[in-house]
Length: 192
Image (cartoon, rainbow, N blue to C red):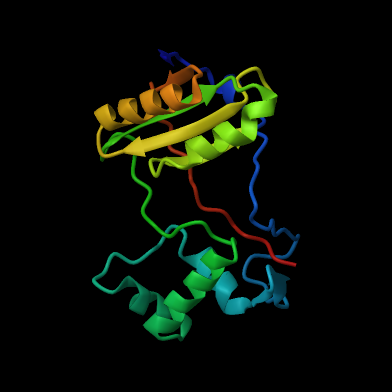
């Protein structure tokens, strides 16, 4: 069963993010040269850091965007693609792609489930198996599994939620966007 509800901003605070990516932090100044860091068995060097920091929000809209990135970094197109593939394989980045304003292209929603603790891994794996799910977090709350579904249409979003509910045998709370607030999704990555 799918329930629709409205959520206040306070209902979404303090997420318990379960991620396998390495977290990288330091107090260094933006653009400061830092030594290479070893994450997941390989070095993240100054070019990797520039690639990750400089192109989060200014990704070139061009026929060959990786060639444009390479020009700016002093690399060829293949070297840029190799670096991004290595960062992806190592879990440092999860994707390279556009972020669209909600509902400008297709449909999306935030969803939540109350999952018995002993079934949490099983249900999280079920939810994660859907390619339409692009975020999935455990939270310390009765509604302990929260995820975002995006699809080519709102009808497909509804189908995915219904299928998750059917397979899990649990209710899915549908929390559609009521009002859009612009949030800058770029992060100034600090490196030690």
